[in-house]
Image 1 (cartoon, one colour):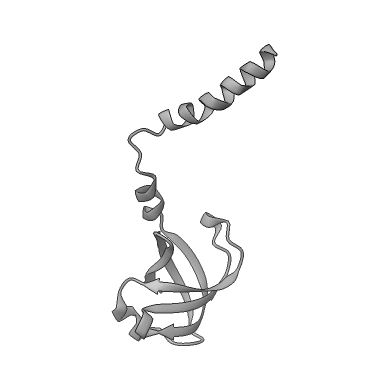
Image 2 (image 1 turned 120 degrees about the vertical axis):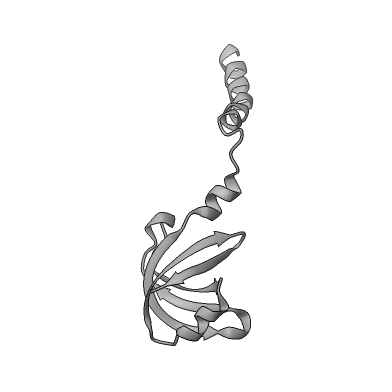
Length: 105
């Protein structure tokens, strides 16, 4: 019975202890500020939606396997320089639910 009471108390205290170590940290800003890098091939450019679809290799900073996905493009002028089947090295950040390309080489 004592052990059960101790486990229950520990379970209730754990979230409070975890939060106390993170006071003052803005987790959304920290996650959004992380730039991720990948290489891939453009499969589609959609200027109307400011999107580019890229078949990219793994993204180690996010533990992503290779995949094809659409990214929002931060600078719409960048879309003029991109074309289907073009090989690119690119950087992107997470902004809310979107992944936004910030640079392409």
